[in-house]
Length: 109
Image (cartoon, rainbow, N blue to C red):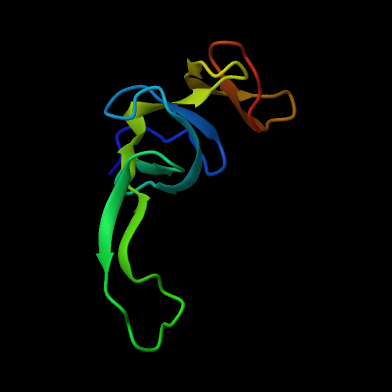
């Protein structure tokens, strides 16, 4: 089970804060909550060998390059200026939960 809630969602813009792709920015493609990983466009590219499958003619064949997962602790939400920021949850007067950046207080939802 995940130790912390993942406050990053699909289509968020994130900055990689550690690892081989440190400093890169990209859009979140998907979130794997079970493994605490996120997949970011153009970051942590891995090569996979794909065999042709009968019955699936549109499947790419050969050595394909796709995004690998990054642990959620190695990324942060990107501010408007591109700097990384953490995310906190605030409750509004009407009871709605809102994701807010800690650095500048910009609402994400």
